[in-house]
Amino acid sequence: DGGITQSPKYLFRKEGQNVTLSCEQNLNHDAMYWYRQDPGQGLRLIYYSQIVNDFQKGDIAEGYSVSREKKESFPLTVTSAQKNPTAFYLCATQTGLGTDTQYFGPGTRLTVL
Amino acid sequence: SQQGEEDPQALSIQEGENATMNCSYKTSINNLQWYRQNSGRGLVHLILIRSNEREKHSGRLRVTLDTSKKSSSLLITASRAADTASYFCATDALIQGAQKLVFGQGTRLTINP
Image 1 (spheres, rainbow over the protein chains, first blue to last red):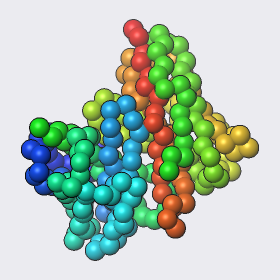
Image 2: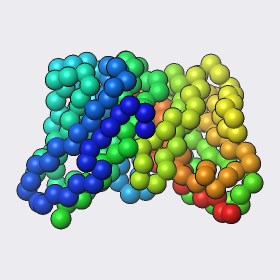
Image 3: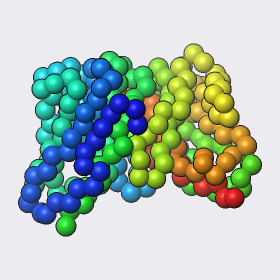
């Protein structure tokens, strides 16, 4: 999992609550990504950021928000507008633009009660 | 926006046997990558093969790429119990004006002792 930390490892949320998932990296990578993974499925891109103070929507951004105030941090907020948030969330980094190797954090499993 | 699809979805073999997984994709690529995911963990990069390469080796891993057939295969030789994991191919695709990695749904590999 390298120099990428995600917290918490497990998160439980009541319906109607917003929750924020943390992703921190010490790899000095410019690009950071958030993916959602449902059981037995591949990864779907939620948001990504290529530089500080800039981010772009991915394929399934509705109900999520992000910020990139520091190079090292890319927190993801799951809002109450996300109707089916129970999933495994993965943060990844990449050295820069393009589609070379991505490095993944250990993930956060979010469960809505 | 799924680009790569793995086949088979699940594979169960005996320890010591070879495991072969396939990935097909739809549009032209710059590179193709394979990742491994142990249950409940983040993805780990295994190997990257560029579009002008046909074969690449890394330890017990052998990856081939056939751009004319838009397909790739991952061969794991002399499998071990520790190889039990899900394996994903990822291809680059131009989405909304930016190059992004797109992951397939993965092959679940089980190595039986």
